[in-house]
Image (cartoon, rainbow, N blue to C red; front, top):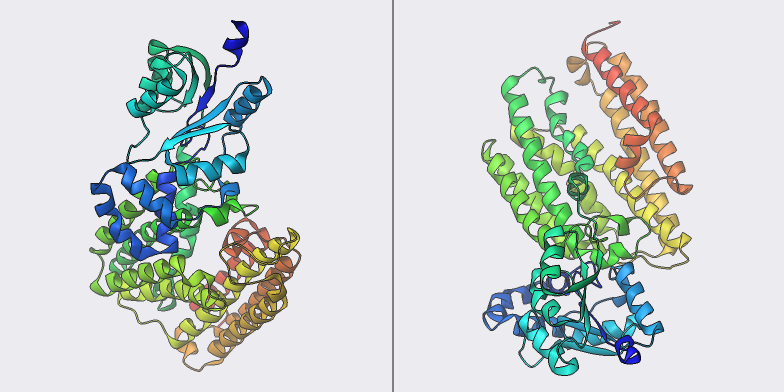
Length: 481
């Protein structure tokens, strides 16, 4: 009798239990990335039932099984059961087309019970399938949601994988709970990281046309610029969330990006699917209070970033040109919001300096790839052999930006804006020092994937920004003239 009890099968749910994510939700975004037009079929598939929807998605997507976030504690339970000679069964509502290759890649299971034949194996249907196979009280079951309560009611013992004390109590009411494995809940700071609030600093470029035109004292202009900043920040966060959902597999293979909230499954994919359109709605609701021209620029920004996320980020050189253009578009947006037309000098300087920053970002990514003894980075069109070219193009763009700044200072019309324009000549050497040091740091691998993040944390970069602002202030107020 004791021997029979010890060999009671351990049945483990997949989505949210063994995996810290849901294959159905990930399948939708994988399909969006691999073949966006196929998403038009989703409503029709869903009308024919969840089992049909899952089957059609499984036919069209290809997962990198090794990249999926596994709950290590649940995997350890499976290994422990196998060591005791107990059969371990993957019992999942995911279709067999996905469940079997995943089970094979993990090497933890003796059998797979999954959705097939038009029956969505969840709740009572899963309970019926397991009871038919192993008998009432003939198996232990690990699950994570209220849909698992019927299964727990027929199981010998239950394992609850959830942060919910209420769910644990409900499971205890229908079965003997052997163990509760808590799952980390997302905190407010986790959602802020998902929104990449620190990236909102880039949107301060919206105020540049106002500052360049010496109209920072204009209250209507400041109000419009502030509203534009809020709208752009919400739109940018919407894009960041969508981009992270599309790049789940690539981010999980990256030494730093794998810690992002969606890649690490700290925030469920379905929540991100709600966050992205909600943020976009907020963005255009705020933009409606600015100007029609600003709304048009904001729409252009979203369209370009969407094209970048779906396709163009994998196109060599096109990707960095687009990144530089998106930075410059923020300056254009500031002009559209305030009615100030950015000058040729401002747009030319913006394009070249931001192209250099975009190349720093890509160079740093490829340097990490080289350090991992890999030739290419997931989701990128570059190889480690391109590193010298990226550095050459990036440093050249930086030098051209410094040259544009010097030519602007030497332009006779500049004196009409800056009574003491001699102070401005301190700006080019400061800028030259900063970009040269930035590329030196990038070459040494001392910059993470985003140079803006580096600059925020680097006291020398902040000092250079302060000194340059001081130069323009002294020149504007005619000090020493």
